[in-house]
Image (cartoon, rainbow, N blue to C red):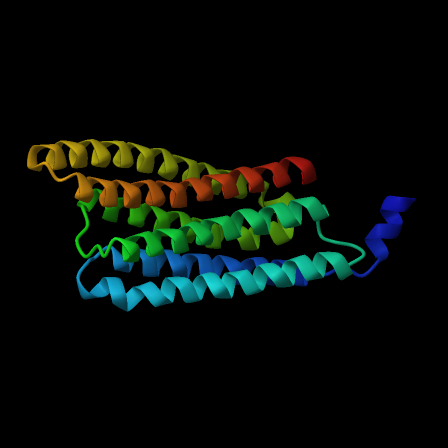
Length: 215
């Protein structure tokens, strides 16, 4: 009886629109961060854009939280809604932290491995943009959603390998030159980029949990 009653009550379907908007900002932030890794003048050119997209995403996150509070019937569990938007926001927060780390150390040159990790973040963000709209019909799209989440997981694993190889090569290069400061700066950026991609894996796990609960 309770389940039937909940089905006939008005639902706040705007949650899906908000998820889509947030995913767009995540993808835009990833693209701007990747552009910074081209180095040179691109660093300063795209730095402010990364921060701006993080601000945009934060605004959407606040809208989602407010919608959860005022909506009697939500498309899926309130905790899942808040968990998903939080994981998505964590990803773009890490992009902001990465951009700030680059700016803090005044870096203008980047290893190819760093650019590959930036590419991984862009790829994950594109998959996220494809995945999020499917949540509006989660039962029908469960198989596709899980497949996309697995793609994110594979990219995250590849990025881990790139990170490890890149940091190892960096250490050997800086050790040979006796350049500890360059190692500290570059390894910090490597670690930040790894965390960006890791956050997409967290999003995939969150989405898969939602699918399990609602299919």
